[in-house]
Amino acid sequence: MADTFTLRILTPEKQFADEPAEEIIFTTPEGRVGILAHHMSMFAAVAEETIEIKRDGVWKVAAAGQGFAEIFDNKADFYLDTVEWADEIDAVRAREALKRAEERLKHETDHIEYLRTQSSLSRALARIKAAETQSHSQ
Image 1 (cartoon, rainbow, N blue to C red):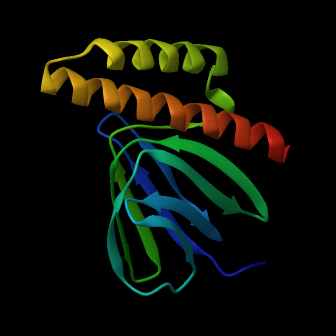
Image 2 (tube, helix red, strand yellow):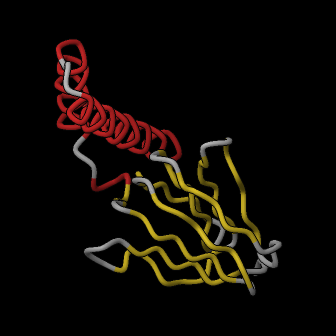
């Protein structure tokens, strides 16, 4: 059995994960980061993208919203606005949401609405990527 660390992923609505993990790969604004057991302590912003989790030798993919991660004492705590397993994502709906967001971006003039639309676009892209990544790894 590979060395593990405790992984917790929390959103405002639920506790998504609280389990041992062998590895996690996630995206920060600076790029992709991989965490293994006994990783040095760190605090990082989490970008809206996929999160890949290795447990019992098997990789599983989730679409993650924005948030932050705190790595310390052989634990990785993620506090995210949203997260969902790739195999629970309706890829057709995600592509439709992407098209709607892209169309809204062409016409938005209000700054706040533009930022909301950008967030919708990022979320749809993360969901599509997660669904496609999970389907390719099976």
